[in-house]
Length: 121
Image (cartoon, rainbow, N blue to C red; front, side):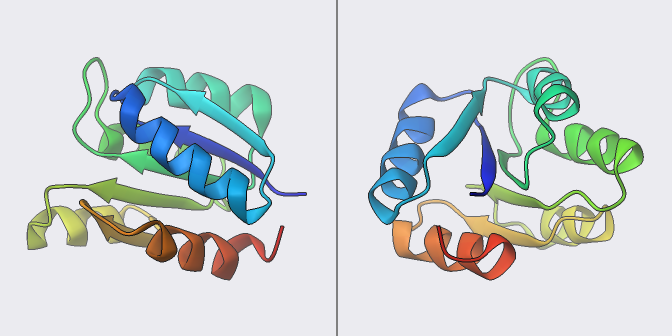
């Protein structure tokens, strides 16, 4: 069973994604509230996948992505953000993100990405 870490400063967004993943059969789900929390939880949980927002307080998602990838070059991180700006997408991919999902998204898009990286639940 894949362990997935959901990172977003908006509790509502974490709930939407968590509910969608749960309904699809993914049950080993964990949450972080910002980039610093994500790095800390990544190091202790060693999740198979991280779904992470970009715009967050304390440490943004791009900084957290770089910190996670520095600690684990094989980390699977997918960025999710309303900022679909080309430069952010390019920076995220160059920094090691596996994919970039633009908000607002349909949960089916998230599920497709999750399944392609960690497989079926």
